Figure 1 (cartoon, chains in turn purple, brown):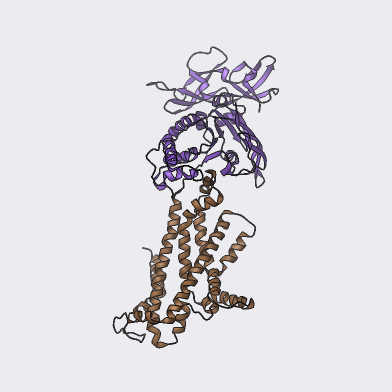
Figure 2: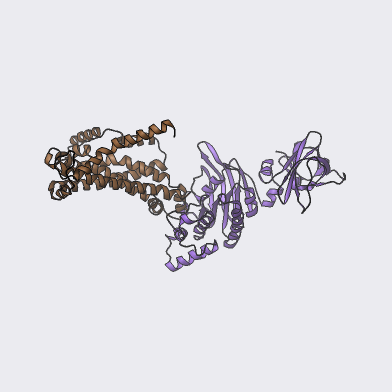
Length: 360
Length: 265
């Protein structure tokens, strides 16, 4: 596949601190790519480096086989949707959308056609003459998208475009953005701190911490096979339990307080597996609660300490073993049935195949 | 109501009376039919306003004042726009101290500025004319312009400029199509304030004007002739009204910049 955007070992230093600390990325043509990380992790700086608003301290950006060094933002094949949308307040919808067409030699008829097409695409047909001050947040977002898409960029950069919208509208826009991206086929690079947003929309996600990329993977890989405890706890929730490797010949034989002795494969291990002590990770929904008696190593007993009802699921805090350690377990609710009560003793059955071993 | 806030209200009331009562005497006596400036009033008359139309030297002074006011408000505003743009968008060493020196005429006694400019111009061998007053007034207006334009530029979201660049526009095009329209009310406010300041300014004009007088200098020279006093009062009234209208307009535009940029979020 064509590597449309290549970021090659980029550093960006602000006042002696590395905001971007040696990042290399390759983004395919037509991909919906997300940069995910907590605030201050350098994801926005990386986006601005790609857009050309920042100059890298070292390293380079290559877009469509062209080196971007010294290329100013208005000469790059990228367009950006800003976090606050940056709608020109003195222009109406149509004038905002047509802003970038100014320099292009097009007839009035052609321009009008393009404007109406792109407004239709973002669901704003008929809003041509609405004033900027009369636009809602969602409409501003759409105008910002239309204004960028009308120029047919090779790459569309989106800087936390949904963070200012309320939850309902945000979820709707997530789907719309995804569908829009598929319809136009333009490469999207999205910056977000919302892991759910990154997972639902992206083909690929780069997780960033402290200016560095921790993992680049598909949403499913990221959730099922996070390569470190940090990534695992940033993407969704995960239980961490101490473990110990007692044998590592063909398969790993692991011992833990919760599950006793059992085996794991190499593909479940991340980090440097030559160490003895490790951390086992398990997602809350990969443990199920039952009242059945002990049948195998994966089944242990515990006491419900806390229960939080979320509608479709209930999250339990369950104490196990002798040291008072707790596990988070997420259970699907069934209609009309009471969940487990606090203080109740239950049997926990773990899907051991979904266990991950971290050696970091 | 608490005791202290009651006293504060009284204080504010007295303060306003002392501030504005003398200015009110001007229109009162300018509409008085008597030539003598004293109470009791003798009757209503617009005669003194009519006499304004027959004063050749007054018209000459008015023309000079208008030329100076237009030229210096334009110059001061242009300088103010550049200086405000530089201080709000760029960081450079000595920025604060430079700004302090540019703003100094705000608090410096005008007489010092006037004398200093006079000495400099004489030393340079330049003759005194309308343009020397324009230079002096520009010095006075620029700080006001900077303060007005600073707030206009500060309210301007930098991402609007970036968006314009991102959409393929050049730096100059961005200034033309985004920055200028958005700070335009601020520019109008600055022009109006500058115009008013220059029109009413006496000390610098007095020092730097050659043979051509400005309106305030003309008024001052008229004060020597008691017969002319009611006419001068009428002229003062006109100036007062014009100044108030211009300042209100300026305030209106200044608030409009703040408002239009606030809606950007």
